[in-house]
Amino acid sequence: MNTPAPDTPTAPRHILGIEGLSPPEITALLDAADGFVELVRSRQKKAESLQGRTLINLFFEDSTRTRTSFELAGKRLGADVINMSVATSSIHKGETLIDTAMTLNAMHPDVLVVRHPHSGAVELLAQKVACAVINGGDGNHEHPTQALLDALTIRRRKGTIGGLVVTICGDIAHSRVARSNIHLLTTMGARVRLVGPPTLIPPMIERMGIEIFHDMKECLQDTDIVMMLRLQFERMHGTFVPSLKEHFHFYGLDEDKLAAAKPDALIMHPGPINRGVEIDTSVADDIDRSVITEQVEMGVAVRMACLEAVTGTETSKSKLKAKPKENRRKKARS
Ligand code: NCD
Image (cartoon, rainbow, N blue to C red; front, top):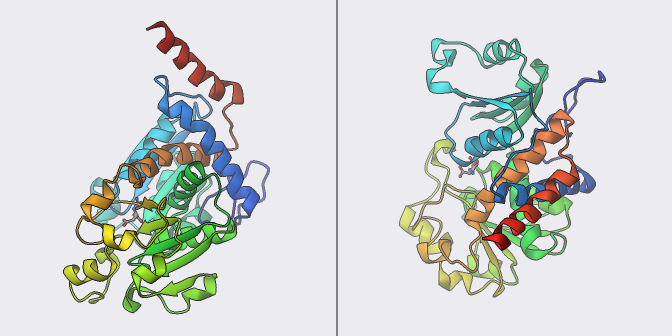
């Protein structure tokens, strides 16, 4: 995909970031993921495109959604899936990232999904192994599958991405989600605004073709999508906000601030959410406007599409279309 893959005919493709992907490449991944949504909603969720293939999840950082959804995505496509827990691996015995990668590589996996606290670590690893690599989040750099699942959620709800006004709010400085979303949304023609305290907006980020605000109500005017971000303390070195209470007062999404956005604005959050810090419970649980759990649902479909893309496999259209009809028939009989 967007990375220098070795030029042998069987070379794996990697998904290391959104930066550099073209609108047709993004659209193709979203279309493929869309095709999986009905399948993962049906009773029989399995396809066979990855039968005989091996997926290893290698997570050097905590994760609930990303790791589980990659595991489910792999299993639903018929792959053998192994989750490497860093806590019980030889990394704690002093093994380097590259040595761990080479050890796993010797077992001939087809795909490695890697999450690492350091920006660039996943790309470095991808240069050393023979299999395809998907970035499950590297430091504050990129989290491509999160941006793709956010885009799929938006596209299914709003019918398009181009022309929408998207506000990303909170800890932009430490967020790989913000960075991947800025790349994707601007590439697809959305207008992106960032809002947060000056300490959490990285210098020069306006070069990415976005607008910067420090007043949340002003920023939310005409906004179609409000994307909230957690304060990512694990990547902060020093103090960036005076207090959690003050952060919520100025940048926490509550009904009062949300009233400044369009009446049909969607509320998004990559999770995990911190209620009362960046988002109020009444807004997070608003069944008409919050799509936070829908984002999780789209995560499985997007990761299925990404796994097929990097392995050069495809689930036939007839298989994808057959599922909803079968279900409708069963429902009609009962
Ligand atoms: C994000 C991550 O890990 O980058 N979460 C996720 O993948 N769903 C955002 C976060 O941790 O705040």
